[in-house]
Amino acid sequence: MSVLDVLVWPAKVLETKADPVTTFDAGLKQFVANMFETMHDSGGIGLAANQVGDLRRVIVIEIPWSDSKYSEQEEKQEPWHDKRWVLINPEIIKKSGKIRWQEGCLSFPEIFDFVDRAAEVWIKAFDENGKEYEVHANELFSVCIQHEIDHLDGVVFFQRMSRLKADIIKKKMLRRGPLNNA
Ligand SMILES: [Zn+2]
Image (cartoon, rainbow, N blue to C red; front, side):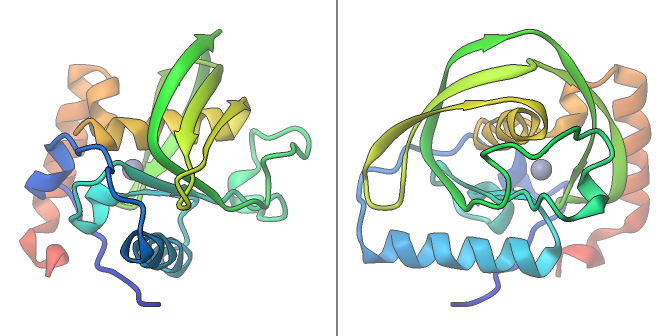
């Protein structure tokens, strides 16, 4: 396994739509393993392939229940906590309600802001073995899935915020300079 470079905005690939996975092979499994290692190394709870410069529709998610850093808004342990989720070619088949969560993103270091999303989503996806499954997500899992599917569609989180907030974030990021992407 290896840790991949996480690209930060304004890397072009973050605003490029990813393509469906058509081949489920050993190379894909290796890529998924590398994505988990990269996400753990960066201290994230979700990662989309775009963020490591790969335009395949692949997402990994793992939300630790014990980690207080992410549990401010979480009320109780859910079945999706502490599990490794692989979402390949994910599709939202149903959504309901509204939720507002303070989101962060590995491609926007040290930036956190509130985004409105559907409270619950029902997802259809494939795992790394090519097996199709469905899952219902609420709370942080739901927020995370919607954030990561946005990445696959080339949408970054400030595009879900007001123009004013988006401009502030863009300015902050551009002030950081391009060296962060080395
Ligand atoms: Zn992100």
